[in-house]
Amino acid sequence: MKKVLVVCTGNSCRSIMAEGLINSLGKGRYEAHSAGSKPAGYVHPKSLETLARHGIEVENPRSQSWDEFEGQAFDLVITVCDQAAAESCPVFLGQHQKLHWSTPDPAKAEGSEEEINAAFDSAFNLLKGRIEQELLNGPV
Image (cartoon, rainbow, N blue to C red; front, side, top):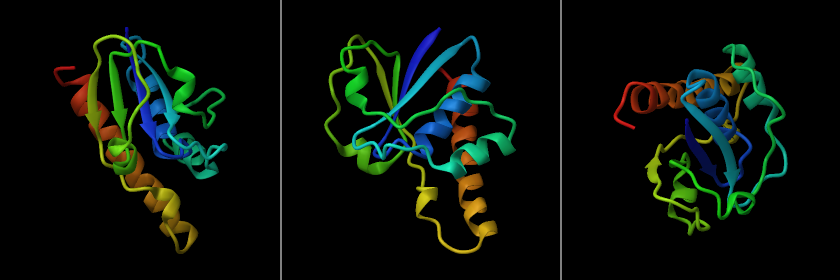
């Protein structure tokens, strides 16, 4: 089983959704965790609503620092926001592949409930497509 760390700045939306998706869709093939360079300290409720709406169950997700994973070995480290991709990451042991999946931050969406839900669904679908294409059906 490949071990994956999904990194974002706040670890409240995109990385949480990617972690849930990888663990659900890649069950038995991947074990995913998520973390942030500057964790928000909470998981955005819309992230959890979006996962649930699409049938993805997550257990006790939390916004946590990538420092908690320093020194651990991962097969893949995936950044999902451009800001985290440019930051200096802590040292993760072993030979790991780095991937960057630029994903717009749905937490910045404004407007009606429907427009905000659409932003979260868009991020969800983008991440799901990358996971299916690059992890489940790709060379990784």
